Length: 134
Image (cartoon, rainbow, N blue to C red; front, side, top):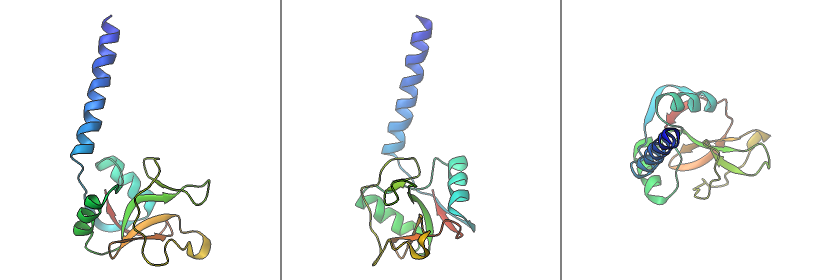
């Protein structure tokens, strides 16, 4: 019985943490030298929760205010299969997008990561180094 109650307490604590995160979502702009998308993801997961994911217009407006119209990595990437599916760093599908003109264009055939540039989503090579939005 004690084991079941401990599990229930742990489950409730985890659920509370997730709900609190969703209700109090904060974005963090990290400039320090720029990083590749993969290093940016690792950094955000170590210091915060993950690269930024943007799920509605209100969050987009907040991100636009923070990102300073510079190139800045966010958590959107092209999943390896199917090749046209865009996912957030946490693994869930993306439904709210705001691509720049003629984007995504997959220039050179390997632009699988997304950066915000002038407040719009653009696909870039994941090896480019940009500031981060966690």
